[in-house]
Each structure stands twice: as structure tokens, then as C-alpha cells.
Image 1 (tube, rainbow, N blue to C red):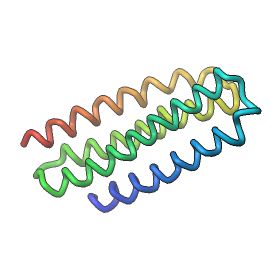
Image 2: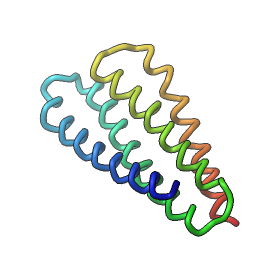
Image 3: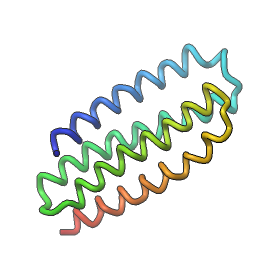
Length: 121
């Protein structure tokens, strides 16, 4: 599982850098400033949590139990729901996608709590 989280974290970071460049260059003239800010928030949180995935992989190698694994899965779910919904909202204007974003935020919070508890052991 640790390899999966490390690889997923690196790939999610890769995608975040690519999405950030796409937003800065291709979307700057196509989106409103508000939509671009929404897109950039998705990129920023994806990068934070890609790094958190790598941290979860590292902690899982040092802390017994499943809390670090839970953290990793929660970070993945959070990226998909939080960043994914913001990307969709910014690019399509589908407003109801904003209702999904808090589910990703809750997954991020739960992931950080699990990671903290795993490190405590």
C-alpha cells in the first residue's frame, strides 16, 4: 500500500503542476477571474494533498496499524471530490458541483486527523 500512495502522490503532483500551467497559460483568457480562482484553488489543494499522500506512504512504513493507510485513501478521495469538483465547476459552470466540494474537504480533514494519530503511535 505504501508504494501505491507514494506513486499516486507523485502522479497527483505531476497532474497538479500540469493543471496549474494549463490554467496559467490556456485558461487565463478563457475563464472569468472568479472561475480561474476556483480552478487555481483546486490545483493548490491537489498539490498539498499529493504531498500529503507521499507523507502518508512514509508514515505507513514507520507506524504500525492502518491509520496511515486510511489517511492515504482519504487524501485520494479528497483530491477527487474537492479538486475534481472545483475543476468541473470552473470549466463547465455547472453550479451543483460546488455541493460536492465540502465532501472532499471533510475527507481531507479526516485524512489529516488519521495521519496525526498514526504519527502519535
